[in-house]
Length: 207
Image (cartoon, rainbow, N blue to C red; front, side, top):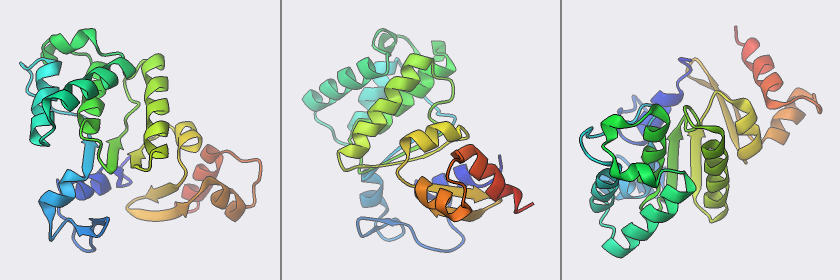
C-alpha cells in the first residue's frame, strides 16, 4: 500500500499529470495527442464509479457510444463479455443494486468493449467470486495472446506470477525491478523461490 501503483496508472490514463517524464503508446504521445492516445486505452479503476440509476446495460451502451462502436459490434461484445464474466442477468438491473464484485465485472466489460491496444486494470480480482476470477484470468490471457497489452496491478503475487510475462515491482515510488520472473529469480540466485518470497526479499532490503 502506498507504493505508487494506482498513482502510476492514473498518470497513464490522464487522471493525474506527471511531474516529469513522458507517456506514449505506439508513437502517440499522451501530452501531444491526448484524444488519440485515450482511444487506444481501456481502464478499469480500483474503485469504479458509475451513474448509479443506470442499468448495467445502459452503462455499457453509454461507454460504447463514447468510443463510436457501432450497434451490431456493441451488442456482440456486450453479450460475449457479460457471459464470460457471469453478468448476463444483472445487466437489466440498476447499478445501485450491484455488489462490489458485480461493479468490478461491469467495469472490466466497459474497459474492453472497444478492444483497446492497452488494457489497464487496477486490482481487477478484488471482490470477484472464484469462478469469475478464473474466467477473468483466462480472458486476460487470451487478450494478451491476441497481441494486445494487459497492464494490471495486484497485491496477489501468485496471480502475477501465473499471468504476467513481465513484472514491475515498486516500493515507495521507486521501481525496484522490471523484467520477467525468471530474470528476477536468476538475479536473486534463488531458483526455487516463488514471486512472493522474492518480492519480500527485494522490498525488505529497501527498509
